[in-house]
Image (cartoon, rainbow, N blue to C red; front, side, top):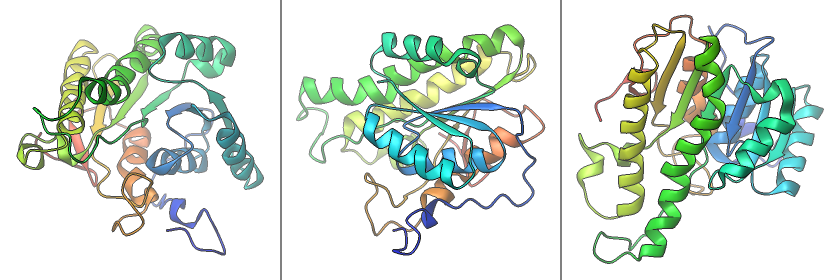
Length: 256
């Protein structure tokens, strides 16, 4: 967890070799917590103006204040990804900042630990899918459409190793979570193809951040939020747009 001397120490990015994002705008859903906050800090440290979207106005303001005090260009905006009207209102209220160069879909929730396929409730299934899958769909519809029109942009979605049908996703249990993340991988692949697989100026990718020290991952996880965000920063800043439509972990393509 972050040190007592510096509560943001777990979020300090390694920017070695990454080009600057000066003049660019990034929007990060779930951007004030966990790996999303790691993405916010990293993108802002590269010079981007970052908009954090989240549901807790007080927490957003607190985190934005901490980051601005460190010289980072960050603002917070309240929006619930399960409410398309919230996202549309945020995009409108942000003006030019509502048409980002980089979109990071990081908002996510874990399912109940006992949520097996025939034991979970419909309410639990709907809760997880609403954030992890439908929320990504609504966010992409809202903020990625302008990217396609101007033929420029990066869309990066936080997936999970537990959603990989090539391995961890086949272990059973946590059904709503695993299946939502597998579906996110499919959404990314499908949208990347619709966007021309990078040939039309827009890349679309998924990232497995690994097991990180967050509210979801717990205090004993082996990776920091900054480490979880590293592949996101690399994809956001890399010069080439392809290969794309893939699942990445530690800057490497992994099967899903």
